[in-house]
Length: 426
Ligand code: HAX
Image 1 (cartoon, protein in one colour):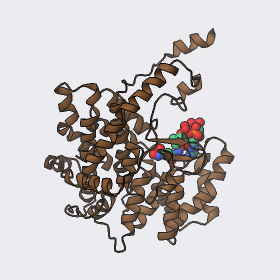
Image 2 (spheres, rainbow, N blue to C red; image 1 turned 60 degrees about the vertical axis):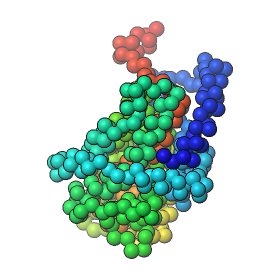
Image 3 (cartoon, helix red, strand yellow; image 1 turned 45 degrees about the vertical axis):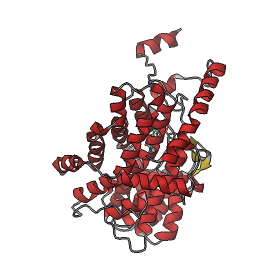
Image 4 (spheres, rainbow, N blue to C red; image 1 turned 90 degrees about the horizontal axis):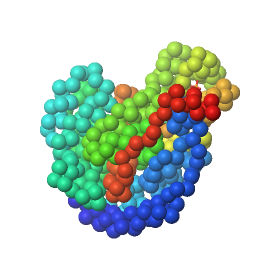
């Protein structure tokens, strides 16, 4: 076990619990908002109903991790980001080294996972394979074992931490296995103890990377996708499942299934698909006017421009900006990357003119695929798996803290249409 990480968390336990108790005691009955009927029909959008301390997303700031804007964290390692998400501060060198070596020791994936993945139909989506791989490891859960042995509520965060660290350590290998199996890339590639978590993922995928820039992309990718507060569809699913005292294997598998929807994490796959289709239908690398006409036509026919719009943001997603900076440096002449930039110049204006989308700006999914494609990961069905590997850092931090705080089971109230009709008739 990563001693320094556990000690750090342990030392915060009492004050965090006292703080929550005092807030509830002194302000528990204060209203912090109203709920209007529109929100019941609109996916509960904007209703403040959860506490999540790992990160926040401001409509005009984007992702902020423990008070630090994401654009100030782009040179960090995902391991450092996990430490920050969980404890509120970045690790020093000693804590980072200890944490990395702990993760490496936990990295062995049970062999039955390979058997399960090998037995799946060849046309299974990589997200189905990923979610299944996590779920089939549930029998490893220390949390469930401890629960069965009668662990007290106060101590539940410890086996939850244990499970999460085991899963974090194993997902790069699982993702790489899925990639290599599904797309016939050959045998598994072993991890290298000298490499960090993201660099190991890059290595095990087997992508040609002579100058190490694909490993750098993986590092940035894993940092940018690590968390996005607690109310987005996958994080919410993760929180709901774990609030029933289900363990992390159940929670992550379920959360990944939510991430796999085209309005959420699958948008990165859909976005690249959209760009390739546009290029194919136009018949050549399109000029600005051709992109404008194509997108206008799509919107006129009720289509969605994948990678644009957001439930919370009202600015260009800073994660998009970070990827743009990477692409400008590393892949400036790439044809698809250039199309992403053209679309960025054109689509916000079209969405504003259409006047439906509340946020006409690009989100992270509008660009991530173009960079992966440049480095030879052309199988866009796989892209959401990268998102999931990274987001498991945030899922983990959120449910470890939820158990540490002893959060209640999540159970909002639903009402019937009849009830609404009666209320509005009053
Ligand atoms: N293209 C066309 N129309 C869009 C649009 C887009 N990119 N974004 C929103 N709209 C439309 C909506 O479909 C909705 O239309 P109707 O009223 O006809 O139903 C209207 O504009 C209002 O929607 P909104 O309130 O602005 O957006 P929501 O909060 O309901 O949904 C979404 C936010 C991200 C789901 C939405 O913008 C969307 O579908 N975008 C494209 C898919 C996408 O990029 N998803 C990834 C989001 C980031 C993420 O979660 N990554 O994992």
